[in-house]
Image 1: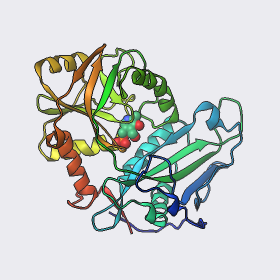
Image 2: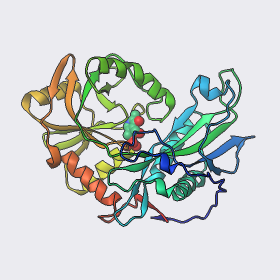
Image 3: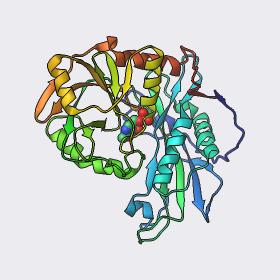
Image 4: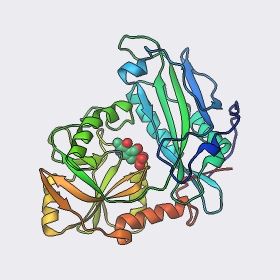
Length: 357
Ligand SMILES: Cc1ncc(COP(=O)(O)O)c(C=O)c1O
């Protein structure tokens, strides 16, 4: 799909560009931001006109509601430089739909679709020189919204700022990660905000993740908040297992984020004829599968790494090691299939690519 500019957003240009300040050999995630950002305010009960302005600080009251009571949501997606040099934003409409769900859960106004989609398009077009050329390096796009009303009372804010910023990111090295099955702490409970991409979910994850790191793990593998029996997701990733040759992932619920990568991988796996199951995964089943050698792969899936192979799963104080399937596993195969679409090597039959003209 090619985006056409039907809705023009006024631009205040940044001068001079900061592009030369970037150390392209060492692109640390979230360190450099492109020359411009989009802002669009919600005041007096309606969305005001969006603008693209030089990247810079916001002026905020110290009693802005977002700073105290957590009305903040965000999205994360990537723009790629394709093999033919065109720039591709991957599945922005799916990310928009998820931002709508997050807005509704957090009692925030829904940002207009055209501001989100055209805003991404025009910002990436303007800052196109910031999209890295090397395969695997991308421009990460962060749309977000915060409550801006200056009031100290716990209430739904009357005013908001929606914004989009962009940061070039380097190639992700696929070192297998170790995860700890979390049986005590909870990231998200039934009826809570787990399916929304709101700041509070990440704040709540920090302490248990810190504890897991002190024990030598990279990440927490969350279990359900009521029985701690069923696997949910890990860090900023959904999780997949290959059990007896079937690609298995926990079903979506209100305590799991509906990952765009998860959805893409499931579609590609089904298309390739890989047996797929979206069903609950009991921690006891995983232990049994390790005993019988029935588990051959485990990986996380998310925008940042696409696929992050899991090398070790810690369950109740015991570490279980996974065989490493390298480039031959189902995970690696699906990553290649996804990259082939994103870089324009295979037909984009699902219309996932939004080409910036
Ligand atoms: C909690 C959580 N789960 C899963 C994901 C994966 O989602 P996506 O594939 O859309 O990046 C993310 C990242 O956005 C996340 O933060």
